[in-house]
Amino acid sequence: MKKIVLTFGLISGAILALMMFVTLPLIDKVSFDKLEVLGYSTMVAAFLMVFFGIRSYRENIGGGFITFGKAFKVGLLITLISCACYVIAWEIIYFKIAPDFVEKYGNYMIEKARAAGASAAELAEKKEQMKNFKAMYDNPLINVAITLLEPLPIGLPVTLISAGILRRKEPKSSAPEPNAAAVKL
Image (cartoon, rainbow, N blue to C red; front, side, top):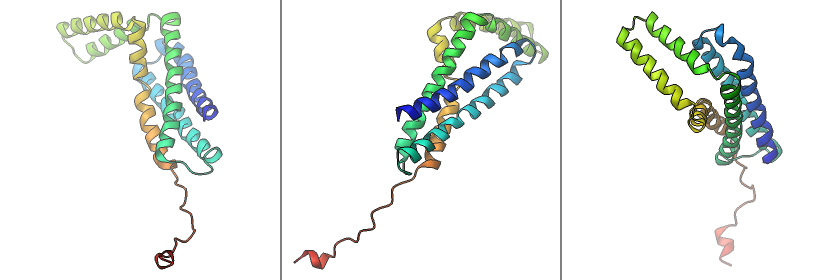
């Protein structure tokens, strides 16, 4: 099980991490809304590895059979490895490559609120929220927790759906049950 979980988890995690690094130069060129759609679409595509990992386990280790519980366990482990890769990639990006990300995002959110007709008081409140978020987000433990909450809500439903689709119980043996009258002898 370890080999399958690691293989598919690392492939999924590599897809997520690679996409983050590839889209990093687009932060100044494309709106955050479009990058968010691209990011979550990539997550769905990457978490397809959960389905393929469970199927691989069922076919290669389970002899063509797997219970829902076992399938969920395999899928959850793949999801957690993938999420760990995502978090590690983000920590590197945020603390080493793009430490100004929150400022850029904050400016984007303030401009978006301004374009929507926010009052001066609302804009000041938004600036204060972004300042507080930056202070909180600069704490690596909080940063890890918040970052983990991005892919995990995508990976868990994919895991549940994949486990449900791929479960296959072993057929009951076809040996006839002993006749009750013959047992009394």
